[in-house]
Amino acid sequence: MPEATQNPIYSSIIWFAVLFGLMYFLMIRPQQKEQRARAEMIRGLKPGDKIVTTGGLVGVITKVEDTTIKVRVAEKVEVEIFKTGVARTLKE
Picture (spheres, rainbow, N blue to C red):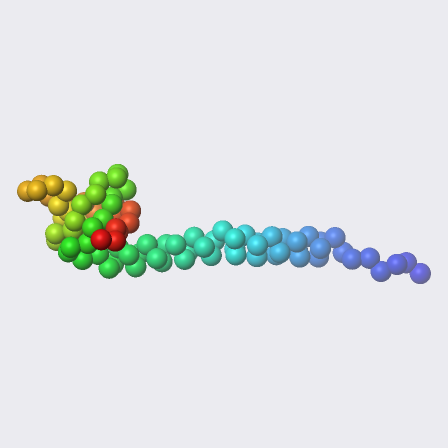
């Protein structure tokens, strides 16, 4: 009687599924979590928040509009930037 052997196609599919599962939990899921946190941070911007832009500019938000914000970077100096240009907010 021939021995019962496992079909190589099924073992390949199983390994592919395991590798995809590992990639999801190690790469995709953390990236989605980070994107949600960043979107929440951008939605929560308000006047008076101290921020850092992606270019390294530090300032205080003076006005929030739909897609842009006005940031005071020095006395009597305000710049307008896109909300997506905010890297992070700073704690006072």
